[in-house]
Amino acid sequence: MEGECEQVLQGHTGRVNSVKLCDVKHTAMTVSDDFTARVWDWSTGECRHVLQGHGGWLSDMALLSNASRAVTVSGDDLAVLWDLQEGKCCNVLEGHSAQANSVVLTRRGRYACTVRSSHCLCLHATIFSSVLVLGALALAIGR
Image (tube, rainbow, N blue to C red; front, top):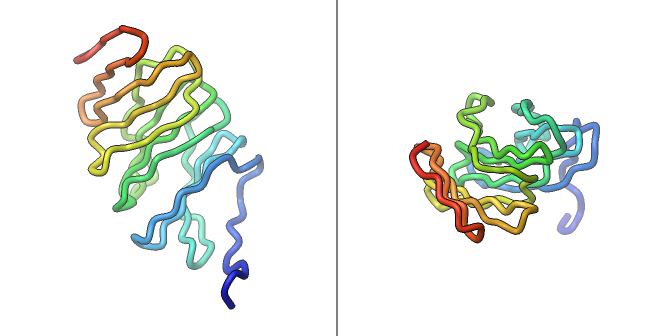
């Protein structure tokens, strides 16, 4: 019936802070205060992967439209690029000196933009691990 809850995704042990949905393979992704992100099949409720590696609560994530990769941001000052097919960390996007609160990916996933609590935006080239810090007049490309 329309408007009713069709599926409950259970498994986090802390508050869920964000969720993203993708029609590809019925993928949902959640981030939580329990220091994990989870990748779900929203049609069955099955948890496909528990993504671990952050040392703090996760505040947000961005999911590619093909559900192959995602970026998570956390209270541990890290932004992490994940391979969602394997459930593994691909890269840690450097350049944060403060907690990242939000993240978006470009359509093809070549760049991630994170918002830091220090009033800065960081633009990360996800392929080359370069970072351009906007708003702080700092530039560190090609590290």
